[in-house]
Length: 109
Length: 112
Image (cartoon, rainbow over all chains, first blue to last red; front, side, top):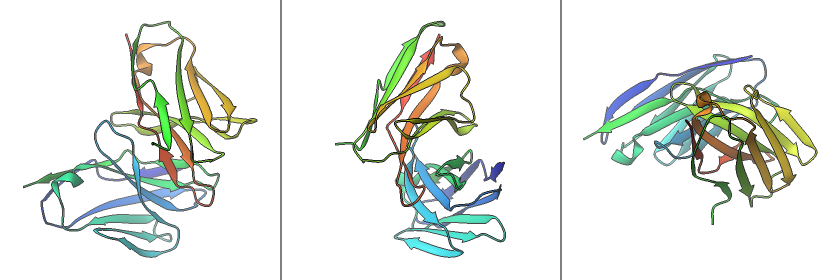
């Protein structure tokens, strides 16, 4: 089976940096995904890590440690439009994804 | 044009009615998925299909059925809708070289 833990809610200030953590347990692993979802909208793909280390993509970076079952999403220079839910998901090895319940990030002025 | 489309976008129906939600994609992906999303529960997999002859149950398939009419089309049916099927439903496809999934805009279903 699979299990994902991530904080339910976070608040951060515009212009700041925020780190959203994700820990997971799984019997099959084919990568760690982060998705962004604005309220009432579809999840959109942000990042994919299959090897340990940091992947940087503009203001967003994602880190993976497979041995620790741990990932984080780092958002820099926060903007108001970054207020959204951030979903951590694991590839289970059968071309399926198992999603966490998401972290709702609120960016305040 | 959107790569993954869903119809209808919103639907209100009554208990006991049969409902079909439709999904179409232009990405050329073989693999398609139906999820439901409820507050606090995240995305849960209902059914998935790896090609037109392959249908698989997901985590919460009871009360639902699907049809894969073509590579590009995957429909979800609620045979007899009940109020606890009120949710936001998403269709998705998978990029074949990774597990990256691409989602449709969602259908908000309310069962009264």
